[in-house]
Structure formats: C-alpha cells, structure tokens
Image (spheres, helix red, strand yellow):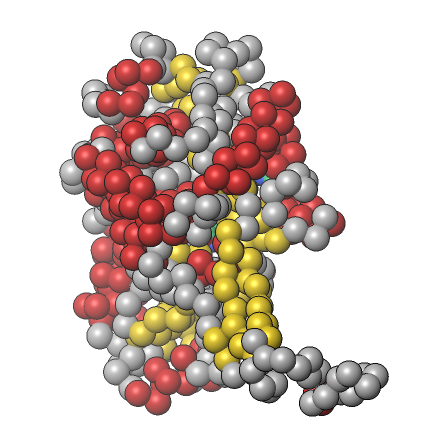
Amino acid sequence: MELRLKPFEESFGKEFTHPGTFNGQWGVEGAPDFVESISPIDGAVIGRVSLTTEVEFEETVRKARKAFLTWRKVPAPKRGEIVRQMALRFREYKEELGKLITLEMGKILPEGEGEVQELIDIADFAVGLSRQLYGMTTHSERPHHRLYEQWHPLGPIGVITAFNFPVAVFGWNAMIALVCGDTLIWKPSSKTPLCAVAVIRVMDEVLRENGMPEGIVNLIVGSGATIGRRLVEEPRVPLISATGSVPMGKRVAQAVAARLGRTILELGGNNGVILMEDTDMELALQAVLFGAVGTAGQRCTTIRRLLVHEAILDTFTERLVGAYQAIQVGNPFESRTLMGPLIDAEAVRRFEAAVARAEREGGKVLTGGKVLKEGDYARGFYVQPTLVMAHPDMPVIEQETFAPILYILPFKTVEEAIALHNAVPQGLSSAMFTRNLIHAETFLGPEGSDCGIANINIGTSGAEIGGAFGGEKETGGGREAGSDAWKAYMRRQTCTINWGQDMPLAQGIRFGSGCTT
Ligand code: NAD
C-alpha cells in the first residue's frame, strides 16, 4: 500500500518510526520506549511512535502555558485566519489522510475520507465562529450601571481521544479551542498514533508559516494509565476533554474533580432506533444498515438496539437479514467492501463473548455471529455483521459492545417502545421512524427519548458538525462541535461598570450613610 503523505515522506524513515512528543519541537528520535501501530487489516506493524517521557511531559505543559500567554492576545478573527489556512491544508491532504485512517484504524476508505471532511468542516465552522464569540448585555437594576458578560480564553486544554475517530474528534475540540484562544495538549489513542502525528504535522506547518510561537499545538503519546493519567491530574490544564469508554470517563471525571478542574466527557453510547408500524421500510433499511454496520459497529453512535413494532417485525426482519447477508466484509481499501475489520484481537474477543452471552441469555442469532479467520481474513481482525432476536430481560443489551451486533426487540405500543428505549444506562443518540406526527413529537418531547441526540426518519450516526454533539446519563453530558459548544472552552466573566456619581447597592441594600439605592 503506497502512502503519499507529504509530512510523512519528509520525516518518516522506512520503518515509519516517529517521536510521539511534540511541543513545537519533536521529541528524541528512536527513544527506547515506543508504541507499535498495528494495521487491523492484516495485523502488520506499520509504525513505531515513541512514548512521551516525564521530562517531555513537563516541558510540553510548560510550553503550552507559555504559548497560551501569547495566543490569548491574538485577536480571535486572526486566530480564525490561521484555522482557515489549516482547513485549506487539510483539503490538500484529504486523500492521503483518509488513506492513513483506513490503514491504521480499518474503516472503509469513503469513511476515512469522510472523517477528514469532518475535520475540514469543523475548521470552516470555527473560522466563522471566530467572529461570533458573543457575550450578552443585560439591563442593570441600578442607575448609570452597565451589566454584561464576556468570554475569555481558558488555558491549555487536554484532549484525550478514542481510536475510532482518530482525526475528527481531535478536530472538533482543537479547531474550536484554537479560535477560543486556548492551546492544546493532545493524547491520542495508542492504537492510532500515526494519524495523530500526521494531523499535528499539518497544523504545525501552518503555525510556523504564520510565525506563531512553539507550544500552541502539542502531542503526547502513551497509555491512559500512565501519560493519560498524568495529563488528567495536571493542575495547569484547566479543562480535560475526554472521549472514550464509560469506565475511562469515570476515572477521568473523578481525577479532574479531585482538583476542581473542568471536563467535557464524550463517552459510550447504546443507541436505539424505534420503527413504528408506519415506518417507510426502504428508508429504515438504508439507515439501519449504515448505522449498525458502518465503521464495523465501532462508532459511539452505532445503532445497537432496533425496536420494531410487532406489525412489521417479520417483514422488516426478513429484509434486514437479506441485506446483512449481502454485506461484503474485507479489506477496507477495496471499493466493494462495506465493512472492514475490528480494531484488534481484544475487540474480536469481546464480540465473541457478547454473542455467546446473548445466546445464553435467550437471544437467537439470525445471521452472522462468527469470527472470520480463513484465507484473506487470517491475519486481520474480521467478524460477521450480526443480528440477534432479543428480549428486554437480556442484561447484555444494556452494555455497549464495540462491534457490529444489532439486537432486535419487538414492541406493541409507543409507550412501551419509549420505556424500553430509555431503559439503558447510556444516553447518546436515538431515532424513531414514523410518519405519525403525534408519535414523532412524543419521542422528541420531555417524556420521549432521554438522549442528547434524537432524530426522526434518519439513523443515529453520522451527525453534522453544526449541532452540539454529546449525550446524557453515562455518556457523560459533554457537548462538542457546533451550536454554542464553544462556551465550554472559554471562561465567562460578568462585568458591571458604574459610570455614575453614586454607589448604589444591588437589592436596594443601605449600608452606612454613604450608600443610596
Ligand atoms: P478507551 O476508553 O479505551 O480509550 C479512550 C482514550 O482514553 C484513549 O486515548 C486512552 O488511552 C485514554 N484513557 C484510558 N484510561 C485513561 C485514564 N485513566 N486517564 C486518561 N486517559 C485514559 O476507548 P476506545 O476503545 O479508544 O474507544 C471506544 C469508546 O469510545 C467507546 O465506548 C465509544 O462509544 C467511545 N466514543 C465516544 C464518543 C462520543 O463522542 N461520545 C466518540 C468516539 C468514541
């Protein structure tokens, strides 16, 4: 597989070894401790990225803080201009970055390129946002007083990302944080360090061309338990934005709360789709296939539970089984492939364990359920897309298994469907298919879906960057990307200016002889 990624050509040796620390300067070449990047396509080692040492971590935090002192004073639209140039540069590298995502993470090429497009989209969004970091004014209760609020840059932001969106999730955080005037310390997943190195190299090119100081964008590489934990506990980093599993989120939330820092948590989902009796089957079929099988079931927004009205259960299930059996699993670079591999051997083990557990708990595998090990599949991490006829009392349906397993759950009434839908600990994305206005509005109303994202007649995944993205309950409550998610990356300041000759107190309080209302 030929990779034409300019930053790589210039910097990677034949073995694709690279320092994992960047703080304006790259760390030492060929450090003794490194992480291997393994392609899930065939299990081959495609690169070695050195782990960040304690000394490098200290230096990185120091530089991120120092750079913040300068970056926060650059006017926001000028910061936006630099992000605009980054968006252009990402466009130039779209094809190469897309290929790298496919090689390192295993998603099919159109999804790899789609992920780079998401990075470009959020950068474009951030450029406009750089002129719209609005504060509000309100009327003071006191004469000759002005009351308003404004937003200031916060500081260095720690961004911890998951393997499944090795580029876009950092982009959602980074592009917004940059226009907000923050600097960044990125700890990517150890499963996708090459993607992180590539993105940082592109951003660094642009920052250098603009004569910006070192330390605005930084990278550290290592496990969650070591360097991840170090970042989370670091008091000089006021905000940690962490994307990953619920157990990771719980650890991060506690560690950051212990120092009264702030978090944005984007954790696991267990997303449900309700198909009412008037579902447009053609639409639903397309949406369910993409939502449940796309990215091999490794999206936080993957459809994991399909709640089907009993009136259409047999017809829809039959069509879905047929569609599942036609899915081509294989090398994600091949155009006929719809589903690539899982990320690693551990993910395959979890898939097998979940299928076995579902069967033990009374579920029936309708299609799939097997690990693919023969021929072209022998060295990679491939499984079959799997449909399970389930029932509400199966505990396995409450957990997120990061694999293409879809549980079908029949129901009779809309109330039953919504109760079933909400009966899991996670609350990320949800959808209902119906043409019935009352059912749709019920689902979107206060007694409806309890998720951060609720859709009608589209699936749960593939969110646009313009909306705020995130979920409730164990999904963590964070919001990223569009809308007013930027506010989490800044500090709010409420200002009162007295331009009069008196000192009136709020609430009409009189304190001593000099004070009047
Ligand atoms: P993971 O939890 O194993 O790892 C995520 C990141 O957290 C990695 O960089 C890891 O090194 C780091 N980490 C782990 N423990 C840590 C600790 N104690 N301190 C600091 N960092 C720590 O997740 P994963 O397997 O890479 O990704 C899959 C999970 O991510 C799924 O649960 C998926 O739903 C979730 N996810 C959520 C969203 C969202 O926006 N809600 C998006 C993508 C993925």
